[in-house]
Image (cartoon, rainbow, N blue to C red; front, side, top):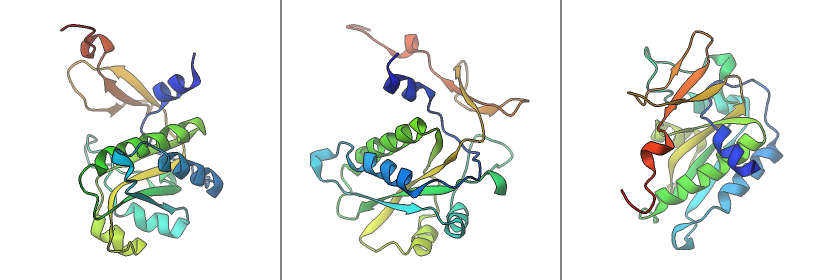
Length: 191
């Protein structure tokens, strides 16, 4: 099989991480593949803030919401938290098409992380004002999203979607993520 295809199929959102720090050179490579992602009209409105220091990671963690489908409310335990974050920033004057740029850059980052056996989870539930203060983000930038990173401490599997999109953990603590079948979503030359 094609290694890119296999990487895409194996990547799942990971929410539990080993506490082994990530090498800053690996994180820089992840930002680099985000940097070269396609950009609408090639405006390149994105910037990336890397957090890898344990003390700052702990502060960032407090600004994030995790796994909305888990009831009761759930978040990684202290010994399962991300060991790094990439905060995706956008220049204030590029509000038109930036979301496509963010999606493309984030997917590049998360696929490259998967190739390194690094787990990732893109988070949109962010207390942005609090995080801006912690990171001292300049006023001409705003926070779009945060990618949590760390070596994987959980297994996540794709399940055929039947009646719900909600992910769940089984008795062995394996995360199951429902996905629609290709037969249900593809239309070739006609409906």
